[in-house]
Length: 154
Length: 154
DNA sequence: ACGAAAATGAAAATCAATTTCAATACCGAA
DNA sequence: TTCGGTATTGAAATTGATTTTCATTTTCGT
Image 1: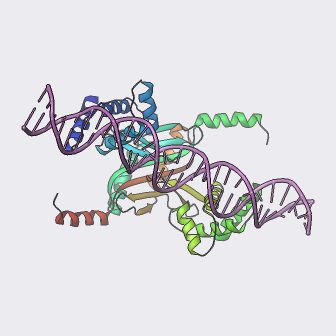
Image 2: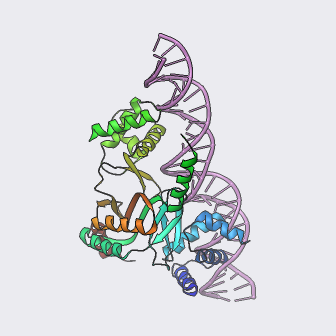
């Protein structure tokens, strides 16, 4: 998988008249090593923690390139921070997001895929990407709230 | 409808120990008068164009209150700008967003509602809100691209 | 009408995203 | 392999939206 991703990225870099650099390789590796949704800041920390030095702006620019060549998908939840997810893991497309703890549960749904296609046809719309996000409270946060309520009196 | 909204907002204001003000009334009216997705900036312009003077920060703070009391829903597309939509219009919940012209087509889908409930049960998740967003290119932008391609040579 | 408490608005602060620019690295051609 | 044009890098500055600050004003129960 990763060999393909590297190949695809370097092909993209070449065909766009750009140059391969050590930093870009480090950033791509760091990104491919994650399986969650990472922000530029997350990646910058991951790289720094691995004792490599790449500037924040470079991480930002490179993630744009990685997204552009189709290896990453840029998504935005309701906090205004862009995050990137690996597109090679394409079975997961949607998210349940806990408003309390921020936990993200990924899921896929055949029913939704079919419904989406129906809608695209209905509105004559060419789909490029899609996100179904359900915000709410996960079980463990609900349980925690119950415990707190039994202790606290307003 | 609007009478209910005003009542609900003033009830909320009172029960939270806050105060009713002229500005809050102006902002709520401006918001209820829109049917699209408006940003704080949009609303501030709408109000200014109506020759009323309310500060930007006040619009921002009041929209947070309106959302808090359930009259508005805060949504974020991929441009990083928060927008508010009227929740009383609850038949429309989802969006087709054109990556070219920014046009937003709203739709609702019974199939998705049912699927959503199934997923909530499956993951033991208490839903507070949800958004299905499909990004792509609308018909008119596709048509326009075709016209441009027939004129332009790379 | 009084006075405590909240609201306002202009300006400043914040924060992520993005751009600038001088120094550096890449890489194809000679 | 060196050369040189071009792209890249990274620190700092900028942008643009959001959020906070704070002095002044307004609200509203008493």
